[in-house]
Image (cartoon, rainbow, N blue to C red; front, top):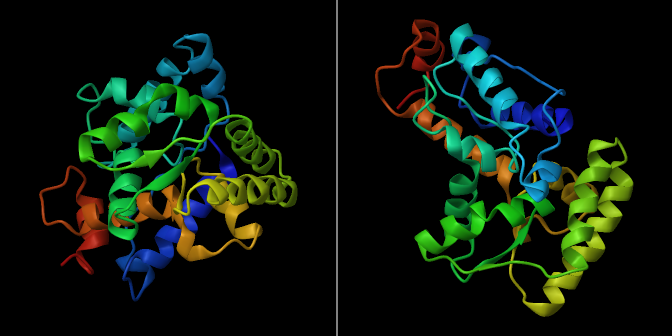
Length: 236
């Protein structure tokens, strides 16, 4: 679900892990599944079409030996939330990770830059309300333009996506001068390509990576011996 975003997640993970050798990196099992039905369309239509394929992919990763699941796709979490407690291993929640990063970086609040499906699902708004965090949701037409920027990145048109996102984000900043939560995992790629200020972004990709590293560093009995061995060298 988003090959470019998945590749960037793995790049960021390799940089975030305090490893000195290959052997000190965590063991990673990757399933890049392009066949998952389009998430935003399903959410807007009120259908469950992506739910079973997502479940199947996550269960397949667990069967391969994964003991921690990470999905670098925000919109997919509208379906993943419904699978909590039904999967054999835990899934890190990207919305929770991103909002907690936003609370640390910008206690005054932030803008939600996400797909139309993620916004419509309310996964960020509900979690922000639980955390007591001020999360501003763009109105039209900026909301649709932000969605379009992510679509352009998926279409291997990052420069166009960057231009669209830059215009939309500057429009948000004219309304309220708050950082932007790039809560579609293609948007950090567009944001960086646009040359927008790094200190005014809370990247969902970076937040998910940080949460993953924190989880892997937490002393606990893990299901897969290989995972214990591969992370033991840098676990605090």
